[in-house]
Length: 445
Ligand code: ATP
Ligand code: MG
Figure: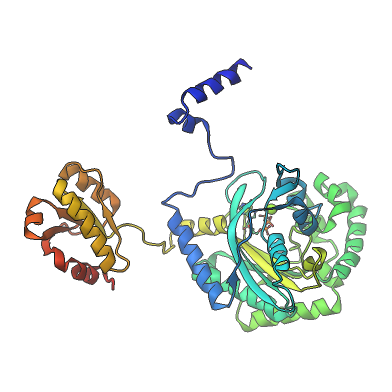
């Protein structure tokens, strides 16, 4: 008690000072994305936007918080997410709210609520943070980010194939094709799955002594998930289990054949993985994942599938749907490992060093005028005065290509000294000629 009290006193005494920052840290599993990392994020987001646009997908933005019921009803009561991973709290008026653990449920809710599913199809995407209370480790965080894509109102295998082809293109554009393998499977209709479920439970129950605790628990609630178990002791049992593929309904089988035909035709390689069941309840028919072996157990970088029953389950008209989501952190980890990322250039082209009062005024004016004249020019103005030596140090640290020096002589003659930081040469230029000169050497228009 005394300790807590003391600590409170320290905080209140130092309120607004350094100690406070030392005491309060970010929440475990939730990370700051720092300026040195954001170029990777911006690069990835830019690539994704371009690809999505080229397929005619439009962005949608949903709130981060929804009624808890939405996730319970869509993801399923007995899934990992709803059982133990959600950030749920009571609003001040007593409503149970949840920080979204994924985007599909919110997206379906938003599309229904805004009439986007009335006799029309939709291709939409979203980007943003998701929240799951999981054990933090590399590639697994409590706040993480996804780009998600959903299509509504199309039931054929052609759209399944389009989505998979688009995901392949996204990974190719990021230079990650060599790092990932496509796994696909079909879960059939919910009726076919229910029939298979019985057969599976019979088989598993007959081997009850070989089931681990998790699997025993799931035997009643979610037996298909047992197939997804990572427990090495369970692998043989799972290997020998009856296969869902052998119990698919005729239509689902034809649908899956056609998806594979599209992929073959496009030259997309894949593995049919009969153990791919996905963790959420709402999937049916086609499911797929892009998996890497470079991130340990957190190997799935992009995952999705068909969820034909979900809209109806949430109170809408029966509407076929399919989508996928990619984990941005995991993709960025691959980009960083590869060191291939053409990350967005953010270092300044020019660092301006003004020497003295008058030069400071002129430098501010000059930097504004150059930004007006040269599209895409990145200028960093030295603020806070200081000796030539200390300003030059900052220029060096900024990574700028040129240091632009504005001293008394330069002011009087209407020139600047431009030092090429790579080659070390320094030359004078008329201030009026600068825009033209910089455009030419930097290749800007
Ligand atoms: P996993 O099997 O790794 O737990 P999941 O099946 O729970 O994944 P989905 O709900 O399908 O994941 O989410 C799609 C993608 O989002 C995943 O493939 C992964 O790349 C990413 N993802 C999911 N959970 C996390 C997390 N806690 N931290 C970082 N990325 C995540
Ligand atoms: Mg998970």
